[in-house]
Image (tube, rainbow over all chains, first blue to last red; front, side, top):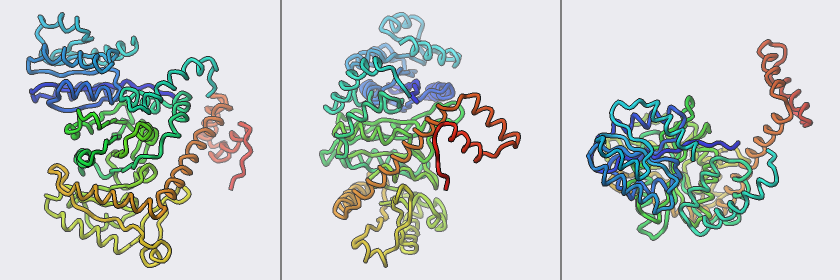
Length: 133
Length: 353
C-alpha cells in the first residue's frame, strides 16, 4: 500500500560541536513516526543541500550554536533553491537572538526553536508545514 | 488496488518524465523515483515497468554484519577505492524502523562524509519500514533505480544484522559479511546463518587485538564445514563441500577471509580486488545467471504472496475478519480451518498439501 512518511534531514552546519539538541530533536521526530536522516557534525552548506537532494526530504532542520546562523542559514536556503529544492522547507534550532528572527523568517525559514522549545511544538509545526505543501 | 483510469492517465506522463530523467542520470529524478518505490502502489509499479528494461548492468555488492562492526565506514572506504578507479557508485544504506512509532533515525551518512559532495556518488538512506531480514521491502527497487541511472557499482548496506538476517543474499551479486575481532568464540563461526551467505568474509577493525585469531577461526570454519549456501528455489540451501564440489563445479568459489581497518583505509583496496574477482568468477562460471534466476523466482513468489493476500482480504468484509478472530480466540474454530474457510470465501480453491 502506498505510504507517505515525513522525511527530515537534521544537520549541524558550521564548527560548533554541540549536537545534544540536534539529537534530542531527531529522537523526538523519530518518536513521532518520521524518518530522520542524521548527518552529524561540521557539515558544509554544500553537503547539506546535496544530502537533502539525494534523500528527497520534506524538510531540513539546521542546528547552530556557533552564532554563524546569519551566514549559514541563507547559504543553505540558497543552495537548496539552486538544486531545484525550493519546496524543501528549513527550520532552525539553537541560539538565535530575537533580532535575527525576522530576517530568517523572511528568507523562508518556517520555525526557529531556542533552548527549551517544547518538542511537541516542533513536531506539530513540521507536520503542519509538510501537510500544507 | 483498482484505480480510476483518469488518474493513471494524468499521472503517467509525470512518471514517464521521471523515468526519462532518471535514465539520463538526473539526481533529483533518481531521488524522487526511489521515494516513489518506497511508497509503492500503482504508480511505482508503472514506473518500474518502464525502468526495468534498463536494469541489469550494475554490480550489486551487499555489506552486512552486526551493529558496530563498521559497515558504514567500510562502505565509505570502498566507495573511495571505486572512485579512484573512475567508477561512480550508488549506495543504499538501510537502518531499522522503530516498531513502536514507525519512525527511524538513519545515521549511515555520518560515516560517509568523505563522499558527501562527490557528484559521482549517490547515497540513499532507507528505513526498513517493518521489513525483517535486514533490508527494506523496496531496497531491491531502489537498487534498480540506481542501476538504470547508470551507476556501475551499487553498495547495499544492511541494518546491523545478527544471525538470521540474510535477505542481502537475495539482493546482491556479491555479499560481504563483516566480523570484528573478539566478537565471540569459534562456535559463533560455525552456527547457522549469516556467515553461510558470505561470498567474502572481512574481519574489520584489524588494529584491535585478536584479529589474527578471528581470521584463523573463520578459515578453520571454512575448512570444517566447507559448505556454502546458495539460493535454490528461493531457499538458502547448502551446496556440497569441496570434495564433491571439485567434480560438480570445478573452480567453486571459496569465500576469502580478509582483514581491513576501514577507518584507516587499510586492506580496502584488497577487498575491492577480491570483490572484482568474485564478480568475474560469477560471470565466468554462470553462477551470476543462476543466482539471478533464483532471486527473481523468490521475488515473484513474494509478490504473488502479497497480491493473493490482498485479494483474499479484499473479498472478505472487515467485519468477517474480526468475527473470525473472535471465533478463533473463543476456541470455536482453529486458525488453519478459519484460513481455509476465508480462502474459499474469496473464491479461491486451494489444494492444501
